[in-house]
Image 1: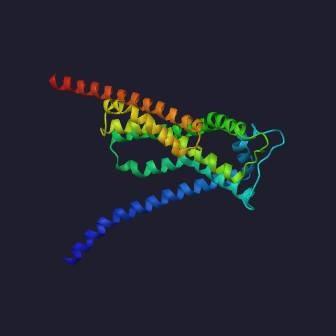
Image 2: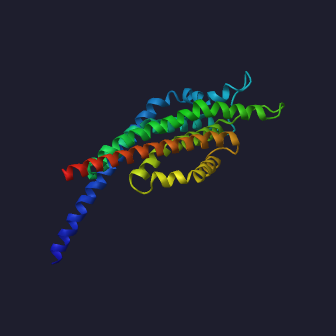
Image 3: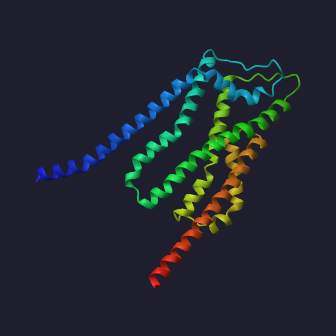
Length: 260
């Protein structure tokens, strides 16, 4: 009896061990790709930092420059930025590895929906980061540099600036995923378009609360995050209505086939 029980445990544990080995393998592949991209970009670390700092430097008086208040900052700040850029650049491959790991356990209809959702998520995240760089940063830094006293020179620490912009990149990248989240909630049946439509006042308030938490304490950056979040929420509702319409048409067609 004990021998039979041990064999059953081994049969249960075998697939689990195989899944863990596959998961480790895919994680290692993702880490290797990130390291390869990082090593390829590291020689351009200072150029990458200069590119990220350009929205602020363009608004400073001629001859102005950033400063480093810590001994290791001139090395660590570009190093950290290059590593983050490598992770951002590897996101499609990382998600591909995640998809390859979970895809065998999905149904065909789930696979058909998952692929465009993953692609859209990547595109929206990059769009949010680009929106932050090309739209938000110029307006935000113009406000910051022009509201200070005339006798105060703006000399930003490179490490503090990096932490500031990375926070905004992440905030806008995640905020631009709202259409995907809204679509999934509607498609999964967790909520309905009508229910979400009735909650618009709360959504608007929630967008500004999130903007207040994820951005610096000024109305400009908060609004620049909250307004796109709400608009993207409406985009998610639009796609939700399309999904509901297609489902209704499909159900009607199936009902006609049954009656025929």
